[in-house]
Image 1 (cartoon, rainbow, N blue to C red):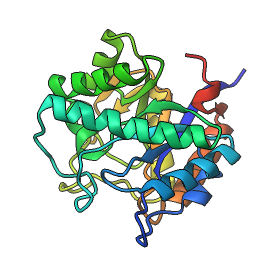
Image 2 (image 1 turned 120 degrees about the horizontal axis):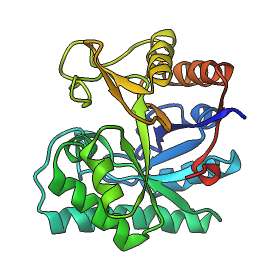
Image 3 (image 1 turned 135 degrees about the horizontal axis):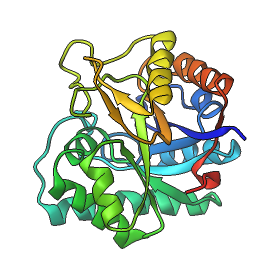
Image 4 (image 1 turned 180 degrees about the horizontal axis):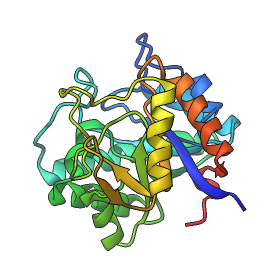
Length: 257
């Protein structure tokens, strides 16, 4: 039997007349969609259209909550009191849930976005806040979290199902955190380079940093960011490459937890 793997992308990040990404094309490739919930991108109509398109293709739905930062695309650090942050995350998950139900679907997972995700990977208090919000909404929600992160460990400690992901198009530091976008080499460009990065990590079952350090981990999902012009070609090449290597790409609705 082939090894099972999930392939996810951040989608629904258009807003009003402003268009971001090629969602329809990516939804033909990925198996799970992390859908923006209006705080860093997205709006109710974009959310609903993205949900509908995902369900038509059998792609599972995930909430992609963020700091309230439309101008900064959720990539700027914000120091928000835990109670306020928790309420905002509940609000975002709930909005996506309501729209999913209206389309005959359901939200399977939650994956924090941008700065919120990066901070939670190293900051226990922020990780706890995200986990509390998820538990308050639905303890059955899956937490999609970076491997070797405080967020993943916190989710597990509180009884959430945690799926560990690696990034196809981002470089890693020796501690397992992403190389900040402000630093050289943070982004991996090109379909071939991204596939090579993914294959090296899958073969080693480890995060491999820029320096070559290996951090052993189970790898259950691969993320391809949808907000760059190479996203579709990269996602297609990665899917073809991992399937050729014996992996079967599945959604979270069909993943054996």
